[in-house]
Length: 616
Ligand SMILES: Cc1cc2nc3c(=O)[nH]c(=O)nc-3n(C[C@H](O)[C@H](O)[C@H](O)COP(=O)(O)OP(=O)(O)OC[C@H]3O[C@@H](n4cnc5c(N)ncnc54)[C@H](O)[C@@H]3O)c2cc1C
Ligand SMILES: [Zn+2]
Image (cartoon, rainbow, N blue to C red; front, side):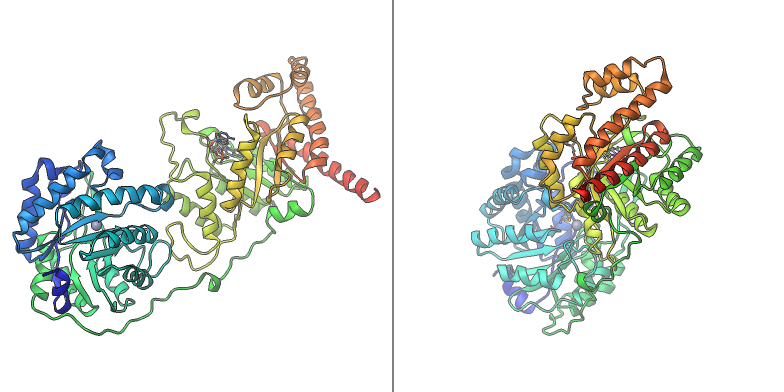
């Protein structure tokens, strides 16, 4: 008899964790490999669960696919491992329990990291191995990404008539990571042909029961739940779960009342937890009817928007000429010169000062702290650079939420120079996300959704610039990256400095049809050494011989060299103003007098130009 027949009239108790139990015994290598090297240990664990009352156990194959086994160099052992696992489980079951072949989800918080094509290949291989061993059913568990589960479930449904259990993992009570409600997700899985649909892992009984309140009884399938024991704690270098079995005993009846017919345990559970479920529910009939309560889910369109004090720069620069200036936070504690610079730039009438995020991977005073103070003290709009280098995804989201709270709504999202170029060559460069993903995520905050899909209750109001490096071998490729950044939500671009009129023309030609405007970068040279460094040591930057010769002739006269740097920059402003509405001036070495003078010059130039255009 298939376990589906049994589920018609009975509640079935399933087993609990395998992986975390092995981990608690001290295994920290590949759990699935133990099917080959420690088969007795695996068999004993299955037997312990059956002894505790489990009538359906799962093979130790959660991650036994080539994508996950390749971490251990075991990608060629998929068949051996899955076959061994099924045989061990059957040996332990001895007709006392059903054996489900388990296949775990692969995608995590970044669904697109692994393509569906690769997932399909990996899934098919594992599925065939398990089916060949005549398991009693297939258990698809711990799927965060619904698209992935729908895809693999459709494959499994086509390949076998055996019972299939399909389980998603919650993002928070009631919803998946992509905001689909669990009720909708389970209905979809039922529609694709799953025989049992449910939830497992990540959260414990509290959140699962709350979720189940919103899930109706499926019409053509049964409901399952495999809660975790607790939230894991990390102590003395190890994770451990504290949830005790008594708590599971109390929640057993509530799972039944929510219509669950297949009840097991996930991470952190032990035979004691399963025994608690079994003690309470053995012999009790399942419920046949239930009422559901809707979980309050606010639609994106209903969320309040946040207000902005100033229109976003992309709107301004589309309308009229606009100058923004980079003034980087200092490397030392004294910030007085920085604030003098910010005030002087405000007086020069620029639209924003941009503050780098530990550029060249060396620490500077926190740019959001200084940005906030600039806004408070001068009223000038700060534009804060955010790199993917220094914060993991948790830190990035928290940082952006902080910027929102401070009213700092203008962001430049960049990859960030790698740590090895800076003060701490051995420090880790995080790069949990790429600049493309960072842009998308900031735009997701504007929809009132966190990076992980949680409801933020309100829409943020960020305007997001992307970085543009035109100093590369292939400008076409660089523009291709800009197009991709636009697809991810970039509102406009800010470029690395350009040092010749020819380059300005070339860049203008390359970006003129882009949907997003560009602030073109210009930086005054401070002297011959500065010019030689940029030309010879900074990738992609080329300064013409004539300009370098002009700077070299003033090697011994720093004041004159600075003036020459300004004169060169002014002639570039003349050329740039004809081509671009947006000009981005970079202040070298906190010498803000230079960018103040150039800002004034840029304003005068653009005013002159517009008068000329009006007359023409
Ligand atoms: C205006 C501006 C401000 C910046 N501010 C900071 C800052 O505050 N802090 C900081 O640490 N860094 C900063 N940077 C540097 C930036 O992080 C690095 O230059 C980074 O390598 C490129 O950033 P990105 O976000 O454009 O990366 P992406 O466009 O995502 O590029 C990522 C990777 O691809 C490579 N790549 C890009 N274009 C091409 C191409 N055409 N062909 C081949 N490979 C390519 C890049 O070199 C890089 O390794 C800034 C750069 C700019 C232009
Ligand atoms: Zn789990």
